[in-house]
Image 1: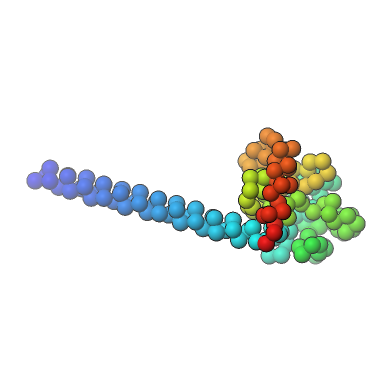
Image 2 (image 1 turned 90 degrees about the vertical axis):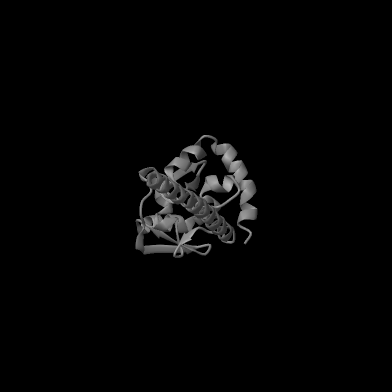
Length: 168
């Protein structure tokens, strides 16, 4: 009798595992579908903005001036190309306004590595590279490490991909 109960428990446990595996696979498929839908939505946007604010509120000039990601002050802003940029100082704001295209991030502020690989992704303002006088942002510091393995190649691919990705 106890053997039958053990088999029943094993069978029930196996059934639970099968259901969990099925749900995990289904959940994974759902997550993949949702990410793909997000990627398609992102393709329709020309700028990566968080509530209308570029670079998640970080000062674009500070990346060049101090080599650091510096949060901007919500009271010191400028609008450029449909985005609101925040600055740590009025001086940085003036510097930006004199040459906004020099300081604005490449690829509309989307992850440069993603654009190089044919899709768009959000960014972490701390994951950045200034290369040849241009600001490139990445999804994370780990992704930035991949980006840094071939910056010139990634830029070449990103420049080729960006027109179709931003043509929304």
